Length: 164
Figure: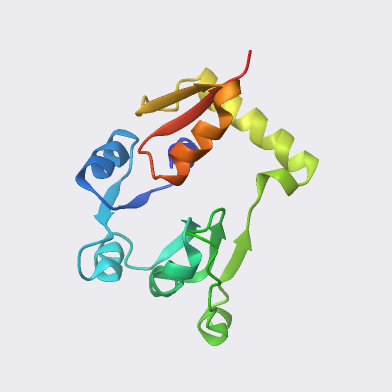
C-alpha cells in the first residue's frame, strides 16, 4: 500500500480489525473498509464508484467474488499469496466480458529486470522516507524460521530479517 501511495495511487484498504484499520490509515490509505462487516463490495464501491483498477490480493480463492464485484473494466487482480493453498474458482465470463486480468506474482521467479526495478524503487522509497513506521518485528538471520512462523500466524506489521 505504501509503495502504491508513493507512486500516486488512490488506495482503498480492506482490513480485518480496528488495529489493522489504524495501521492502514497511518500508512496513508485514502479509505479503509473492514472486510468482516456486511456489504463490503458496496462500501468499497462507495469509494470507487467506477470500480477498482488494481487489486492486490492475498487470498484469491476466498476473495475472487469480491474482487470481481469491485473491479473496474480492464482491472488487474495481482495475487502474491494464498490463504492455505485453496484453489480459486475463476468465473471465466465475469472476467472475460469486462476484460479483467488475473496475474500471479512470486518474487523468486520474477524476471531479473523486474527484480532489479523493484529493488531500485523500494530503495528510493526508503531514501525519501515514503515508507511509514508500522509495527516492526525484527528477527536475526538465524531465526528466519521464527519470522516465517510469525507471518503465518498473522502478525500485524512488518517482519524483517536482519542480515549481518
